[in-house]
Length: 363
Image 1 (tube, rainbow, N blue to C red):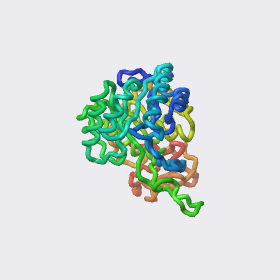
Image 2 (spheres, rainbow, N blue to C red; image 1 turned 90 degrees about the vertical axis):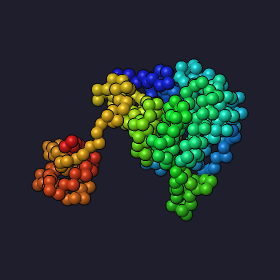
Image 3 (cartoon, one colour; image 1 turned 135 degrees about the vertical axis):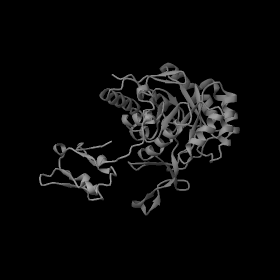
Image 4 (spheres, rainbow, N blue to C red; image 1 turned 120 degrees about the vertical axis):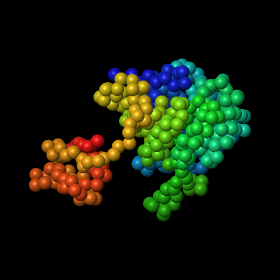
């Protein structure tokens, strides 16, 4: 079986999968469930200098995406320091996995919190969800954490920022790693079955996560990996083993999962790890480093010819024909795929629509 061992900040993890900061790690009890679920490392829910007043309702699953009005931890920092962190530290030590403590948000808040969490943290993650495009507050927060701690300091990027300048600024401030990304927003959801009322509490706004976030976060990881040489933890829309493959190929060193752990429970971590190993075995990849950064070494494709047709594979499902807005594809008298090459715009959508690989890429 493929070896999922992952090297990160001098640690040796059994796999590259960890929870992302959020409800699945809201306290020590949930952290224990994540450990039992098969994570390679722990990340705690973000704490700040006061407990958050989280609006309700604050989470809604819309299947292809997920909305939330989650904030930082609703538990006080004093409670974390006295109860949750000591227990999480004990549980992690027993399991032999590192603990990344998530802190927010300003340099002043980080400077106040960092010395207090020092006994419990193998690393810290700084949330920049509420920091605007100006990199200086983020840099100040990084410097405050670096001054107080002697463990790796990570910073979590938001998906609505330009990633490369922000990543470069973070590295200039001394960051040891980057987490990409937080949820996207603000967004809005409407419950049409209840008079059109908003789905979320508070102001009615939500933040987008789940499968719809993955292409955005993948782009962030891919862009960041091109300009800085620090580990990247990819977060956003991971629900199966092949999602992890994509993040690793885009340049991530490890991944974080939140929404799938909410909708499917903490056992999802181990299930995704098994799916990852199975895919690697099937496709001839022996170790995690074999996958890392592969996309960074690929050229951007250019489709210079129509797709290659394999009629004997065609089942006549008609999916590609329906989707061809250029009238280039049709089914012949035997209900097998055929093409009018002069009409083909080489858009590529048919390659993604065919369920039986009856069309192949020409590049």
